[in-house]
Each structure stands twice: as C-alpha cells, then as structure tokens.
Image (cartoon, rainbow, N blue to C red; front, side):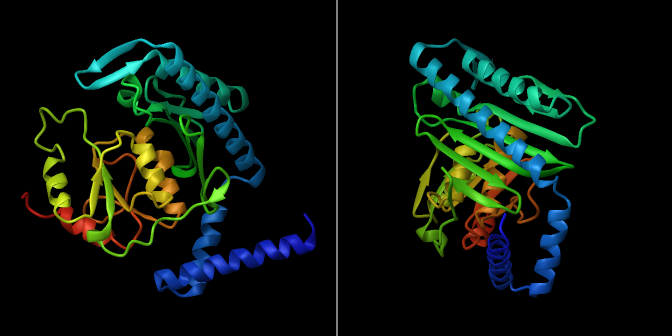
Length: 306
C-alpha cells in the first residue's frame, strides 16, 4: 500500500473515532484507547481476511443449495410441534462445515443441526444453515444463511446471506457493516411512536407463559408499525441497514444472533437484554435498535401487561 493511501486510511479512522467520541459524549482519548485495545484483541489482518473469504464463500454456496431445494423440492421433519427441519438445512450445514474444515480444520464449530464440535481452538464458527426454516418450508421467501465467528469469546465476523434477494450482509469487528459491499447504518427514527419494529415468537409459545404476546400487545400500542418476519438473522440485518428501527425477542439461540448482532453494533446500533444490560448471544433476551429508541423499548419491555 502506498504511503498516501495509508495516510488517507489513518485520517478516515481518526474521523470515525472523533465521531464516536461525540456520539457517546466520551473524551476522544478514551475512545482511542478502547479502539486500540479492541484491535489488539483481534487476529492478524491476514487471518481475518482468510476467515472472511471462507465465510462469504460458504454462505453463498449454502444459499445456492437452499435455492436448489426450494426449486426442486425437499423433505420436512418435525423436531417439535412448531420446530421444523428439512434436508435443505442439513445439506446447507454440511457444505458450510466442509468449507471451514478445508481451511481451518482445528477451529471449533457450533451449528444448529449438529451441535458443537471441537473445543480447544480460540476460534468458534457459529452456524445457522437455514434461518427461517418454517418460512422456507411454506415457500415464503424470508430465510437466510447465518455464519458468525468468535475469537477468544468475542464475535469478530458476521455474514448473513439472503439467497432469495441475493443480499449479502457482512460485519467485521471494528470494520463496519456492509450490504453487497456498500456501508450500512441504522435508521435515524427519533421516537418509538414513529418506529417500525419487528419481533418473533419462540417454539414453545403454546405452552409457555413467557410467550412474548404481552410485549407484542404493549408495543402495538406504542410503535407506528409491527412486523413478524420469522428469521432473526434477517431481522437484525434489517435493523442494521435501517429497514427496521428496532427488534426484540426471547429465547433465541447463538446461531440465530451471532452474525446479526455484530451487524447491528457495527452499523452503529445498540444491543442489550430486556433490562438494558449487556447483550450476550448465549442469553435469553435481545433488544436491538438504532440507539434513539432503545430506552423507550426497554421501558415498554418492563411495563405490566395490557
């Protein structure tokens, strides 16, 4: 890289840190230190680029498999009353796992259908080969491949590919988020009463008292509009690119949120649990927003039922 290009890259990074300092109302020095510490905790650039290449290629390959099954037919089985799995899920997952294994045979994998494999590597690939299986099974075109990569417990890469729209979302820790190569950003909707929200419902909705229906009713009286897509990875990506202003849900799994949650934060959005505390992909509560409406969303989630 030429010296002038390096200087331009440094100047752009400095502008981003200054903007973040102003947005968070924190001294620039603290933001700069936090950024440096975060960078120090990442793998080297070459390794990150190899991981990204494998993840993107695997997501596209898996998406092509899903499109082929959608065109030619598939078998459906029930893991539970409302929880489906198809042979498209298993074929897509196998293709992703094989792609990872060819380049990173020692990396740990956590995948929806096969569970966890390997345990000693600092790298963990978290895979949903078909997020939105019920949609897929009914021919509703809202499903995606989701691949997240953790390094020493921190998510460093998220890739979500929607094969029906050929939309590739990619987020890298400290590197922003993109849709088909173009930077994305959360919306600027300032208030909840002007917001378009999305949510989902857990598979135990028929038997559990914690079924999200109370929160849905509360939000329906406060927000401008409500949607239910049935694919959490897409929901999070749509918050990241400003199509939705906020998203909340209960009882999601790590493979549902690993990639999408990084997409939101790298697009300058905010993630938390229902109390406004730190979000974890291994937790049971998720709130994602454009920052502006986050406190209002948390307030609604802690109100009594209507």
